[in-house]
Length: 209
Ligand SMILES: CC(C)(COP(=O)(O)OP(=O)(O)OC[C@H]1O[C@@H](n2cnc3c(N)ncnc32)[C@H](O)[C@@H]1OP(=O)(O)O)[C@@H](O)C(=O)NCCC(=O)NCCS
Image 1 (cartoon, rainbow, N blue to C red):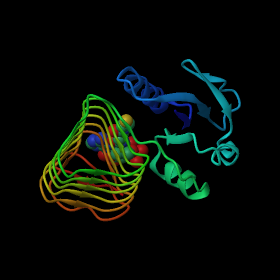
Image 2: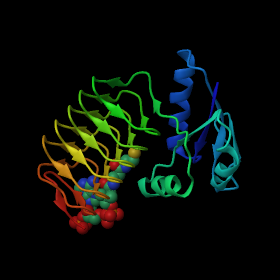
Image 3: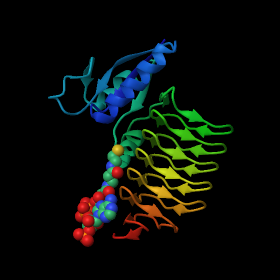
């Protein structure tokens, strides 16, 4: 039986709890042990206790039954926690309603939410978050710690760099390359490549930072 500890007691983790409960309903042998969060005012999240601050990872990670999921929504914080604690066992949370095509690789610790479609030949880097109803077309390469927010759509052969975020409802046309640490605003339409560290908004997208 895998025991799962979720890092972060925010809204994103609530949705991850629902993913895990859906998988338990399907018969997967996993259970939720609790949450870690640095806010000592947070005692529980839905029905699960906050077990202590994030630094308690160190006391749990030697237990081979325990797997972690990082529920922190901010890409850079997720990456920092990943780099600070050498966790070997991350659970990859995929909602049962997600449709995952052939020859898709999803690295450890990703979260794939309800209604997502990831089509053939894609690779999804570690700890990436693919949010509710996003559509990732064929042969995309989504970098580690990236976040494709709810309802975003990327056409075929798109590359999204490490730690980048596509805001809610973003559309990206085929073959585009989006750099690392990029922020694309909600509702944007991306029709050209985007450099590292840019913030871009609008239809079609324009770089504002
Ligand atoms: C892009 C974004 C990060 C910009 O935030 P910011 O750096 O604080 O920028 P500001 O709010 O100061 O806005 C700067 C300018 O961009 C415009 N702008 C901001 N977001 C925009 C968007 N999504 N679409 C179009 N224009 C936008 C603002 O109107 C403003 O224009 P102005 O200079 O002409 O007044 C933010 O607005 C956004 O869209 N975030 C995505 C949120 C999201 O999808 N979350 C999903 C969670 S699951």
